[in-house]
Length: 167
Image 1 (cartoon, rainbow, N blue to C red):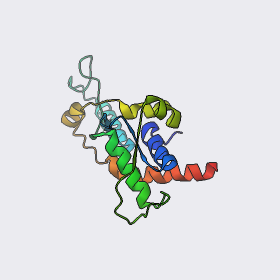
Image 2: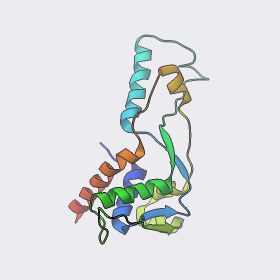
Image 3: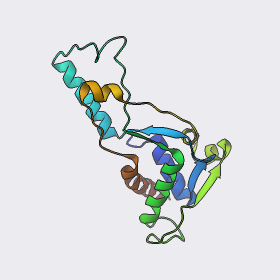
């Protein structure tokens, strides 16, 4: 079973490899974030509604049976910087004190450089993908709780362990 986010884990691994926060262009592309636990809560709420035979037309049907799941949106540049900060705080950046007040070190890339560094997953760092989970919140009372910034330290640790075991 895959337990990795293609974009976030690849970004964290790229931070560890380059020792910099990778930016495509100026890092302004925006993307939604949803944590797998919040997504599973949404699935549970939908299953519970189906199990009690809730046939509300606002929940199901040709016009209403599609749900977006998101908790927040961020610029990819911010996420790259937060991943760099998480790596610094874990002591995983060479020549950077984990306790120091050092400016985030970034590297600006074009499409080809990002592809060469991290494969096609890196292309999303330069694309916009946004939605809003209005229906899930309104009709199911869904309340996502996790955010990308709190998830990044764990992702950075996982990627560092994977890099260590590969060497």
